[in-house]
Image 1: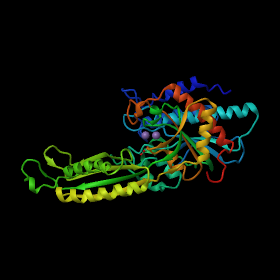
Image 2: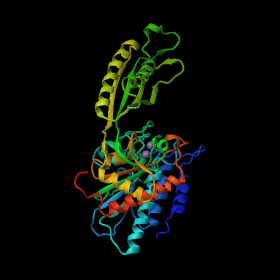
Image 3: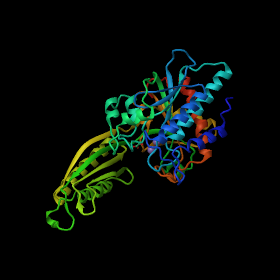
Image 4: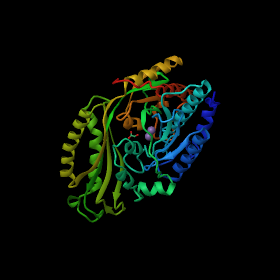
Length: 417
Ligand code: GLV
Ligand code: MN
Ligand code: MN
C-alpha cells in the first residue's frame, strides 16, 4: 500500500485549492498567471515526491513520468489545473490530482506485488484548458494532438496583448521536452451539469461528446456623439451586438428543447466611453449540439438573422475566426471498463454525454481514451459555488485507480470498439 489513501487525497485537494483561492470559496487561476505558476510548482513537487520525473513541453504542458518497463510506451492520465475567472475548485484540478493519486496507488501495488504493467505511466496537467485568457480552450492538448500548430498557439495574445509565449516564459513553463509515445489516455472530471445528480448515480461513464462551434465576431459601426447625433444617422455597434446576442439565444426556438445550447460569452467594446456611440464590438459566439448537422442548421439560421440585423442597425458583422470540435463516441471498451470498475466497487453508474469540452475530447481522436464523471451538486460549474462531495471525489478516485491499472495493463489494446 502506498499510504495514499482517501485522507491523503483530501488533504492534497485542500492544499491545491489554496492556490488562487478566492473569497467566495473558489479559485481564480487563469492560464499563465502567477496563481497558475504556483499550483504548477506545487504539483510538480508532489509528482517528484512520488518518484515521477517531471517535464514541460513547449506549450507548457506539465507532465511526470515513471518508467517501470524500460522502453515501453506510456499510458497518460490527467486534466488541467488552470481555471476560469472566479471559478470553482473542482473543474480540472480534481482530475489532475486524482490522476496522480491513482497512478501512485497503481505503481505502489505493482511494486508491492513484484509485477510489471504493460505500459509505463505518466500524469499530465494540460496547459490552458479553459481558454479564457488565451483562446481557444483545450490549447495544450490541441497542440499535443496536432490539432493546433505550436507557433499559432504561442503567438496567441490575451486582451492585454501578452502572448502565450511571453506568459509561459515569465513562469518558466515553456519546456524543451516532448510528451512520450502514448498508448491510451484517461481523465476524470466533474460533470458540470445536473444529469447525474438528478438520476442519483455516483459514476458517469462518458460514452459521447457534443460538438461545439465558437466564432469570434466583430460588429462594425461608427463612432459618434451620444447626444447630438440624430438617431436616424447612427450606426451603433453596441446596438447591433445586442441584436446579435438576442438572435443567438432565439436560435433555440428552432430546435427541440435542450438540443441546442447557445451563448454570447465575451464582449469588448470600443471606445467604451460614456458619451460616445460604440464603433466596434468584438464578441464570442458559442454554439453546442449533439451533431454538426444541427450546428450547421443553427449557423445558417443565425446568418439569415444577422443579415437582417445589419440592415436594421446599419452595422456590419464580420466573422473573424472559428474553433470547432466534433461530436462522437468514446471507445466502447473504455466505457465498459468504467462500468465494470464501478460495479466491482458497488457504486451506482450510468452512461453519460459530455456537453462541455475536455482535454479528453482532443486526445480521444488520437488514442483510445476513457473519460469518467462524478456528480456536480446542482450542476453548477464555472462558478465559485461549484461543488462535488468528498464521498463522490473518493469514489471517483477508486474507480479511476482501476482505470489506470486497466489501461496500464493494456485494457484498450483492442481493435475498434
Ligand atoms: C471547454 O471547457 C469548453 O467546453 O469550451
Ligand atoms: Mn475542465
Ligand atoms: Mn472549465
